[in-house]
Amino acid sequence: MTSQPFLTDIQTIRERARQHIENGAVTEGYRADRENVIRLLNEALATEIVCTLRYKRHQYMASGLSASVAADEFQEHAEQEQQHADWLAERIVQLGGEPNFSPEGLQTRAHAEYVAGETLRDMIKEDLIAERIAIDSYREIAAYFGEQDPTSRRIMEDILAQEEEHADDMQGLLEGLDALQRNDA
Image 1 (cartoon, one colour):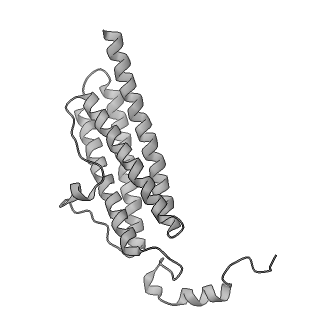
Image 2 (cartoon, one colour):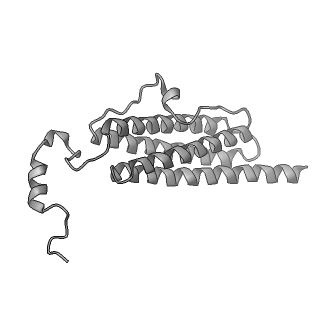
Image 3 (cartoon, rainbow, N blue to C red):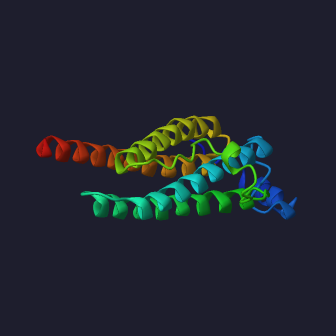
């Protein structure tokens, strides 16, 4: 065992830190393709914005026997999706990029679709589908970031964990609606 636990000696790290300080958090040790990372983070940002908007619509349009329970869930998810968007925007700026909040092209940048849904069941189903899309694409993005950008990977993993909870919540609401329909029959 050596007396120096780091792969790089601290003096070298100190010297590198003094170079290119205009790059802020992006140090010489950053190994990912920054432009591609920013593009992927902006796609995830667009996805979160679309999901926020869809959940907000569903919150106000929910009607029927289970509407208040569903509306409360939609509101909670909209707030969490907005928080995800904020995390992504902050990371994009840390990497020297610009978060793309432009409504122009939002649908094409987003992985999930904005589907309004006619009935409460349709709304829940569309939200579940969107969560499943986010889960798969965010899992792939996190894996792509890997050890090249552990901070962005961790952000995506944190968002992924909440998206999995959202999918579970939507599945539970669907099952609750199905149970109500069976009891009414």
